[in-house]
Amino acid sequence: MPVSADFVKETMGENTGQAYIELITFEASGEPTGYLAINNEDVISRGNTYTAADISFEPAKRTGQELTKARIVFSNVSRDLIDEIRKAHVNPTVTAELVALSRPDVPEETLGPLEVSDVTFSTNAIKAELGQHQKIFDEQFPSGTYTPGWFPAVFS
Image 1 (cartoon, rainbow, N blue to C red):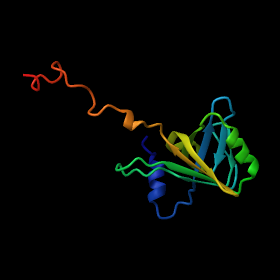
Image 2: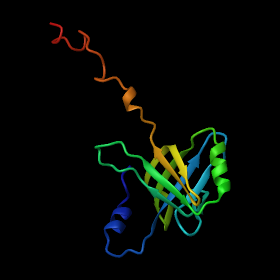
Image 3: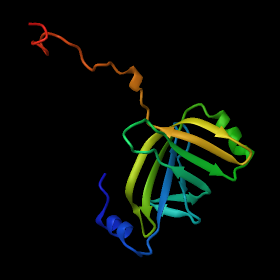
Image 4: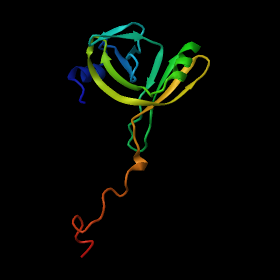
């Protein structure tokens, strides 16, 4: 998805006063959708209230050399949340959107939906790895089959 001209101008400008924040959406079947903002105040975007949360989001690297995963870390959490995670039967999906604080209804960049694949926790933090459902090792290699109809020179 291409970014807007305002985004390019504000990120390349020396001093614009514009703040960009991440909006995180959690979805799981049978559960209410969760909306969190990496911000110190709640944000309303497209009719949904994104609750301010002490979390950090690290998007997957886009080097093209490896399959990397995004990470999300919830800091300063209680043990009650860990019990809720243990009870979950379905892996939730996470969608991250980058928005300008002055234009919260216009996502500049969207990443996801990403599937939660690995959750670890300590006494005060929960870390989750996020990735797209990729089964590259289940793909046929080389792709397709060699038949006389598709590769006549091989069978002549």
